[in-house]
Length: 88
Image (cartoon, rainbow, N blue to C red; front, side, top):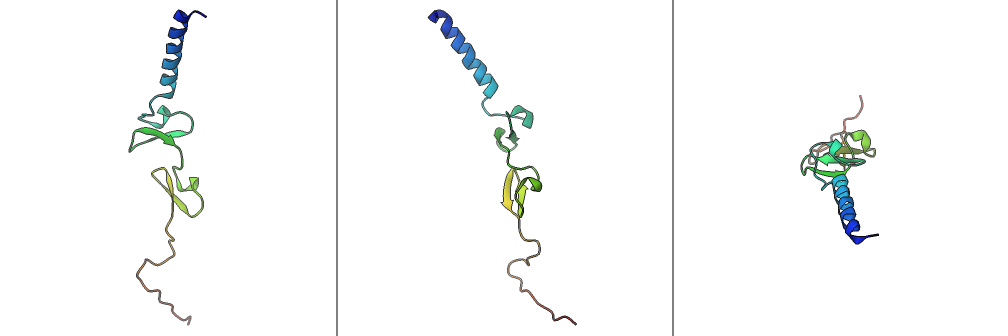
């Protein structure tokens, strides 16, 4: 193959790859490839982790695309004593 034709071909392929991959910047989820979503804080495509609590393991909650351990709702707040009453 003639090198005078090879260089423009390689430049075209490189430009096409950069266009398809982008720089990771986004304005909405549809700007990101595959299963990535647009992070509102960073305006970058990031891997999808969760959007609702159902996307996380039991006992965890979703906050800003991160699964975090959910607080035990039945447990008393720290520092308050638990008072047990005898049954009547």
